Length: 169
Image (cartoon, rainbow, N blue to C red; front, side, top):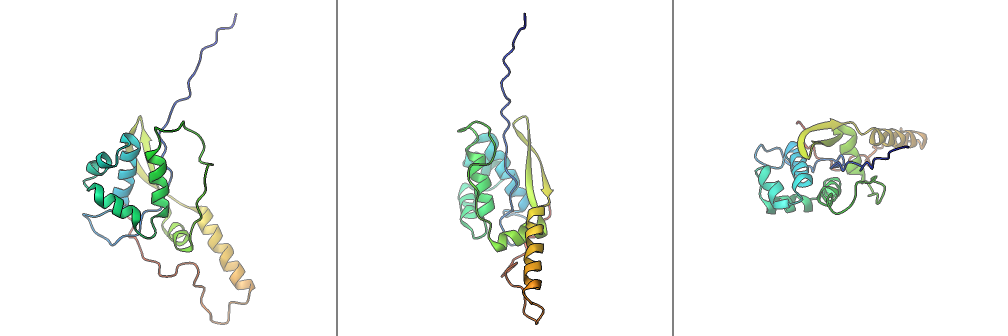
């Protein structure tokens, strides 16, 4: 007689990789490492107030960061981290967000930040290369070269007005 044991699928808290919000370089502000730690704490607690407190920032500044231009990837990661308790752990295939040229440039140059959570706690943040952004940029350069862009015109769609984020962890 075969004995069946019911195994429940472990619920792992997942925070998607994200591009940090472009900010001026300040040690007391929302650095890329602090943004990642905030998302990790948000996934742990489900509370914006508690997550902001854990990283030494105010709730109001977290919402201000969310409204900044170029924060699309951060907002998507925030929404998924905040709703961890509301839905079962499934694949990320529900909704895809369109990536702007500026965000693609940031991803190609600096990569993404990946928040690592172990046993319900934020333990690390690592930088992850975004190969798809690099490949799309190379394809864009190829299209530009085939169209006869060697007449001295500049390829301006990759990074118009791009601001360096100073993404050191």
